[in-house]
Image (tube, rainbow, N blue to C red; front, side):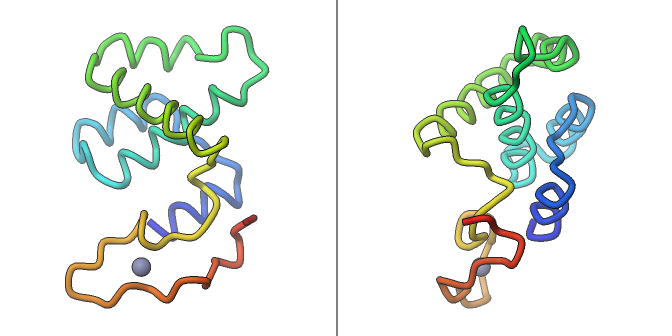
Length: 115
Ligand SMILES: [Zn+2]
């Protein structure tokens, strides 16, 4: 997740529709699914396009009611977190799974993090 977040941040990427469909099919309800869907939600929420949701994403969401609800969850999460961009900020604990390893030391923001 750290590498993915770093790559998406550095290249200013957000997930296209086909990637959302792929991750939903093969790894639903995972951190990666949550991350990719949030980048798409963030793109829409900050877009100057009209309408802000592209035809491609609209088509993807129209095919999958569960993804529609997950997408709305991400939009609400972003709104409640003052426009949180999941591509930035500290990774732990939100983006790490520590089952047998120790939690990361807090305060160690990644070099690429804007916060
Ligand atoms: Zn960690």
